Image (cartoon, rainbow, N blue to C red; front, side, top):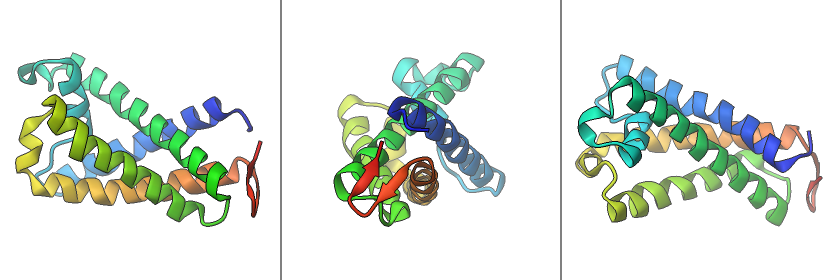
Length: 153
């Protein structure tokens, strides 16, 4: 599979399942965290309806989109720096996305302001982004010809 868009969309779908699935598992374990689908829904809707069916739908679409962007960033990073150590490059890319979104854009744009008072949400996000990065890095590396000079498409 060589098309960058298709590879990013496929890895984005897998990534969204990982992000949402691991966060849901954290909730089932009693960990008090905000969910990525709530945060994504808060981009489009007022806070009072982010847990509605529309909010859930928009939130899941939002997590898919962000996961697809992270996959594209992983591909870009592997093209620039080479195809070795895809898991570490995946973590670097997903942590970059996470820090930029959670630490910069969300506060700047007033998205899900309650999250800034929830340190557990940030800890869960660090774990989830690490798993996401490893899986996306390995998945994207397996879907391409890789040399020590970079991803060959």
